[in-house]
Image (cartoon, rainbow, N blue to C red; front, side, top):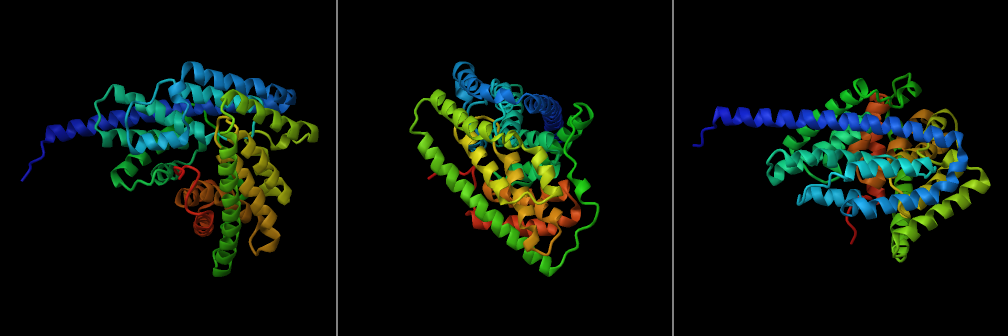
Length: 398
């Protein structure tokens, strides 16, 4: 029988406490800095819409920066997932600053992109730098990367429980030890970001001053909204993959992003559709207050596909929240649910299908809106995930 060495166990615990605390501190502050910078950049574009005409330059500058200073860091979230599943070389130190800066450039020009891609890559790359200090096994390094992902997600979105679940769910890992480490890191990063970094997150709970009544009929309506979200998610995934195949035929990344920027400008500028640019946070708020109609979410989806598909950095999750919330509120008159409930279910439902993360999205609804919506959210997100094909945006192709 193997007898555990108390001193060895204590060293192991202290070592990981230091690692997790360090990751939480660094990623929490980095996430807060990113949010504050993003708020300033978005506000700058909102008051200076002429910056959209500089989007081609910002795009070319982003491609040049990666090509010149961080060519090995050019891979996105899919590359990160492969690295988590099969850790090899330590992520380049330049990866975090590069995704940070290029995402800000995208938003300075009004590109319809998000921030989750930045959050995940920023968190993981910063966390992985501790692999240079501590000698870690492959499993330990995998845990470290997952903690970085959960810390980054939590620091940017302010939903620590959903962040921990997301970190495990989107890479399809099922380790209780790793989940507990992610949970601790996510809560700590969120706390540090809010209290030391001054992070301010959108408060959607103001739209839910009441507890959502649960009933079998309501659950059926939630399932119907989940079905609609799944169909929209499936459409987005199909469109993105087909677009990616077409865009890859343009071998030069400079030409790709230039064409994407010009197409985006040709759609937005003549129609004065600036409310559909950027993250779309004001559009999300509007969806909780009024019926925006079906044309709104369709238009936002087209713009997001263009920007993400042609190579602008930032990801698509927050625009997907916009798409889902607008879809939900447009469907509200057909259901027996309150419009804000429909908007909330759409908010999480579309991303649940696109990202194949139904549990994380259900918990996000619990954290962002009201605990009582959690049951309906689980129904809607699960249905959306199944209808979308259970193979999300982060899955390897083929």
